[in-house]
Image (cartoon, one colour):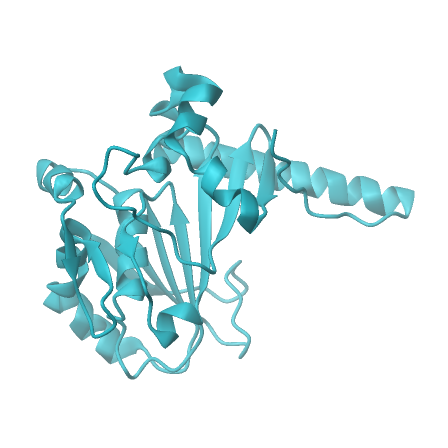
Length: 239
């Protein structure tokens, strides 16, 4: 299946301000020839009343999936909903939000977590999409989240409220919004490590990088506690 819908276990890392168990809608990445064809169907097509356009393959993947919409209609309500995906899966999560395809019955908070996802939107976004939290995670030299590049006839964008986290070494760096376009430029991937432009994209590479960043953060927090100092998030510095 292209997606999985589950309720987070009690005490999970996915917070819910209401103290409940949030819903997790997880989209998988490219895993078949049909998925690759969807990735390449990059025509910009309109959707909705605001004049927004979307990557045609990604839009079709979530708009026309009746089983997905039926499942969401049945389960959503006031719970926090997380849309999560890697690569193609992240693009589907972003498109689901941006195209306002969530059921009207969803009254809770919405968070998108996209890992290594390509750009797929040509705004503007509606009110519901604009009020959601969007977290984009990029692993170092990964080329895919920097696509489509300058050769594309469309200037694809990321959601304006997107929070960009760059995984580099054993750290997770919060990228200021003013530096995000530079970090997500195709040239940045080539400048960093052209030979790792695709290996950095694999799901295993993301899992390993996230685990290393988590362990590093725990070590810094423990050291700060021993020293009686605060442990601050690490931020990206351009240059």
